[in-house]
Length: 417
Image (cartoon, rainbow, N blue to C red; front, side, top):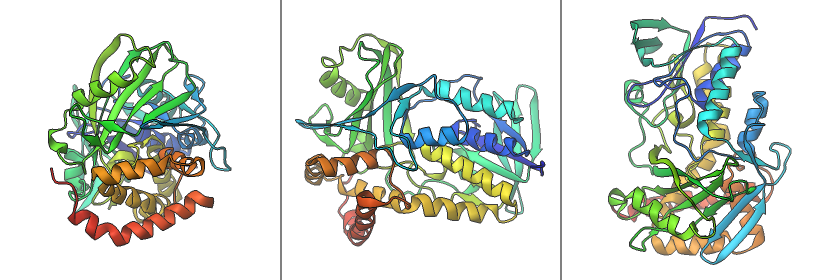
């Protein structure tokens, strides 16, 4: 496709720009079709991105669609779910849409692969460059970039915002988090382990803090295949005492439960924490489209967003390439049709499990039988959306309707901070 105008792919918090997986997916898709693409990244080339590093089969499918080889990743065959004394080991289901395997691929390497592919396709990516939107008459016309060489303005037909958790750019655009909706916090570290080549992800759904308080969230062990494992914990804001939750202590409490079974060795670097946005006031406007975390596309039931980031980046580029006029509204409709019902249900479920009794009851049900555990697997693997057939799709539809009725009560009785 002949180039038409330009696309500026922007991202990152605090007004900085990161060409991460969502922005890079958009840049790659648009550049391969002949569009002129400029991307801006606040960090140095090869910077690390805090993440659990797990790739669901959905993420693998998205990378295949982008023609990104995953040979450098560690292949994963399924998920081990632990709830109290109950343990379920389930293989990823193979479907017409998604392969029967996932992977673990540290984000530093994954993002470098995506950015490199975008550059090879013709996209220009500037590093150590801080960018903010240029807004004229309520329309985003491009970005104002600040770097070591000074300040310059880059005008474009469309700006694709890949800012991660909402920051200054989101405030400029009015694309901030919905204050009444839940969000998450997570922390991860890399640790040496002889089980680094295991072929299953492990998720402990019965997570407790240092005081023994049940935490709506989970702890994970993701084998990297390189001598290390990615160990981390995540928690939802709907729990009582969330504001005083100490993530380092929560990670230490979880580590104590897995240290023996995983023969954990020395830490590799320091533990790092990040915020998980799960809603946004708006994900597009005149001249711009937000993708990935910047669009609130994070599964409230597992904190996963890599696959949604890749897909939304491609959707944004596709709508721009289809016709720049009206691309924003078409993108918003496409994202809504694919993700909104599932994410809305997940946010309502987050209020439900903010109550310790309901959390314990729900976890017993989630892994209580093999058939229900398989549905839980699809939820944890982001394999459920508006197009999902079969039992999982029916359960999602029922849960969406049931939780819609319960939503006012859930919000009124939510656990207080």
